[in-house]
Length: 119
Image (cartoon, rainbow, N blue to C red; front, top):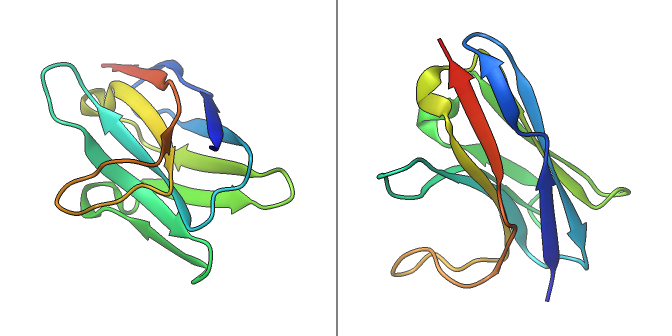
């Protein structure tokens, strides 16, 4: 099974940027992506990349601020986050090859990296 390790989280002021990284040990077959979960809230998808389609998708709430990318040579997934807001504070998780029906399950998940944005 693929192992994933996130890095790049931290504490920043509103309006600043962070770039998260997710190093994969092993090779995801279909897709990789980012999720996040804030205390007391449900996990939500942020962005995803499909390898065979060479396609990326950023969920609507994050379009224009977040960008997902993948370095095949480094086997690393990135999430560039700009103009961060306090409501972006959450644990951010990297995932690979999960299933979505009836809800997100399975796949490989990293331990998460904390992002804290203060006003």
